[in-house]
Image (cartoon, rainbow, N blue to C red):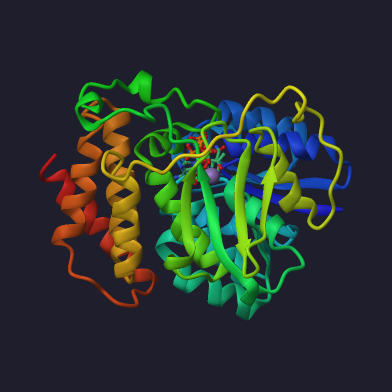
Length: 380
Ligand SMILES: NC(=O)C1=CN([C@@H]2O[C@H](COP(=O)(O)OP(=O)(O)OC[C@H]3O[C@@H](n4cnc5c(N)ncnc54)[C@H](OP(=O)(O)O)[C@@H]3O)[C@@H](O)[C@H]2O)C=CC1
Ligand SMILES: CC(=O)[C@@H](O)[C@H](O)COP(=O)(O)O
Ligand SMILES: [Mn+2]
């Protein structure tokens, strides 16, 4: 039995992780968690019988404790609760399905407790990769990628020598506005932005896909996961999201991982690694597959990607500023307080005013996050 705790079980990745658990008799849930959604969390507790459930919102945690008092489950709340879930003795692996850099502390707590990590939460690695990767090595824990591109790369390099990797080719759908120019993005609505062409995902990552911030975060995530220089990572638009990413080796051979856009595959691969198991659902049929095409990303229009590459190049605390500014900008866009292009202005101006800290520790990262939020709040 592999025992699993999920940080963010009520979201898109969280609920698909539970689908994978339902389909595999040797996977067991021991811990679940949510931000606020206790209706869904209560359903999950009644179905999966975890020993621990964490809720960020303290009042909601109190309500949930009353609702599930007939069950043998401990309810905890706030950051202390997330940390308790992350280090819980019964778990072998933590799925980081929470959204945002709030995942840093629980992820580090789980690694310190010797838990493997099935990592979906890219914001954590983007902002604290220089702390997390050495800690994982020291504790001898595995960081298994869940993000579809990184799972594809992980599968493509399986059994290969690291020094023979020439280039990582990260694929991007191009998002719902692929082909449009800046003037046309001025008036796009929230509804337009939330229509991803291929994937059904949480709202924050769906906006990030439209701005190409998601691809920028994924370049930084890849750099930490696979220890490859920025110069050896290239983004290529693959509008059908059939090729999830590719690796070019020294001899020019390119190995790609293909599949339908279904996150249950990378989630199951991470949880059952190195096993491959039957997965019900749509499969690729190459007799009817019409086309797999490629394009260059439009870096002039979709500034999320070049700004991320700039942040990654500067390193230190700049990826934290890039990420924190984006998190708050997306929150404001989702609340209809700002327009689509304001997201780029907020990120760009936040980075411009920031004085770089070369090797920020955890306290400095969290302080820079707070300071970035305060500056943005005073202007937008
Ligand atoms: N969705 C996808 O297909 C993919 C997602 N990812 C990454 O995975 C992560 C999760 O994405 P996704 O599932 O789409 O996001 P969702 O918004 O769908 O889900 C987020 C989850 O995090 C929980 N949460 C949010 N804030 C807190 C908090 N303060 N404390 C505790 N729990 C919290 C939410 O709880 P509640 O429901 O109560 O709000 C929910 O369970 C992101 O980092 C994303 O970039 C990567 C690749 C693909
Ligand atoms: C499913 C997944 O991994 C997402 O990160 C996806 O890649 C988003 O699509 P984009 O390629 O549009 O960013
Ligand atoms: Mn992805």
